[in-house]
Amino acid sequence: MPPPGVDPRLLVVTGAQGLLGSAVAAQARRRGLEVRSLGRAEADLSQPGSFERQLARRPPLAVIHCAAWTDVDGCQRDPARAERDNAQAAGWVVEACRRLGSRLVAISTDAVFDGEASPPYAYSESDRPGPLSVYGRTKLEAERRALQWPEALVVRTNFLGPLGRGFGGWLYRALVEGRGITLFEDARFTPLYVSDLGERLVRLAIDHPAEQGVLHLGGAEAVSKAELGLALAHRLGLSTERIRRGRIADQVFDAPRPRNTALDSRRAAGLLGPLPSLDQTLEAFCRDVAHALACRGELQLAEGRR
Image (tube, rainbow, N blue to C red):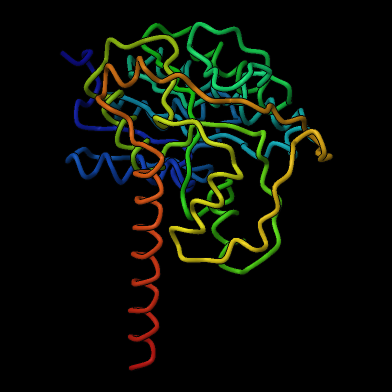
């Protein structure tokens, strides 16, 4: 039974203008849930009490906290902002959920690991984190704050989508535009398509209220970023001539990058069923690209008729 005082049909999503937040909201509505999407305009998570005031009017059954500053190099250059937007903001979300009795699913990252484990090793929930970057450190601190509320579940993940500023959106745009890009053959991860992740996060929030602690939720297969880029180009029927293979060790970034952040998601698979293969992830990616292009073509056709 839901705790007294919360609305059992209401789900709140932070960061709802982002790629993951919008996918979570869409999946929740598909289930027939009422969704309240909160962005910075509705609730400034850097300000004490702002989020709680928004929730107190009608406490939700659960909050899925997707909001974060994910610019890894930006976080390295501005650690104070990274601390505010990632760690402190999570603290205010946790405090609001604790006071109001709402379930919390807090999104974290595979960047909490140092990546020194040799492939094919994949990190499990029991492995000790060791973030290399300011981004990873502030997300690990966000985890610590989230876990102060017993009704919280921290989900570490890495996801792909054809839009937005993340790796998937950057890769898609580069391939379509025919730009020369370097993809790392020593950077391994276990990506999950964003809509598949969103659907599973909603299930964790609503259907598994007893699940607590830390959960890894990635794709079924580890892949290098070079392998992913080549496979996606083939799927989209695009040239691979301008894809160069590189190594993280040969590049200079503001923030250090871990090499192997593959996640062992067997516990999540036991809860939620089999996780998508890489082939299924790419199929979903290409399906959404085709849908977006079709919608754009229909819009241009309609505008041409005016």
